[in-house]
Image (tube, rainbow, N blue to C red; front, top):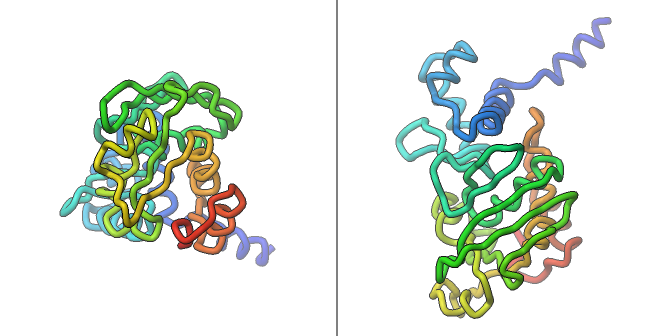
Length: 236
């Protein structure tokens, strides 16, 4: 009996895990982030204690907060503000942080149907995607590209900038090349919507579990290779 109690204690979710899970559940239920005051009330924490937990989550890449505050800005794939990446799932609209995050809703929701409405980053032409059972079932225009301008090793140098400006949709390769976003010395990566979904599965599939742990470097490198993404760009 004492051994069973000890084992249970070892698996008890930490405060950070419980707060992260509450943040994600609030986004799922409402399409919005929880307020700091709400987290204070729900967890019986002071403002300083709540801020400390959110800072810990930001440092471990669980959320991003507005600079100089404890206000939640991102909990990937959720965005707290309106973006060009709108997702419809479970009868509710959500905003994603970037093109990849918009597609990642499908993996996070256990391959439930997801509809994505967005725009070409160059010409603002509408882009519509649908996913079901792990597959892209609708891609309009058919030549739509998920473009990642920065290497994975650069994403977290400024994740807010990365998501906001460098992970976008183009309706064609021609519009990608005309956009000015492509750096000749670092051409980035151009993926089909299906490739973007497959890329994100291990990062997003368990996000709604309280004991979620982001995959480590070796696991991600192995996954990138397994889905056919190899070469210097994908090494982290």
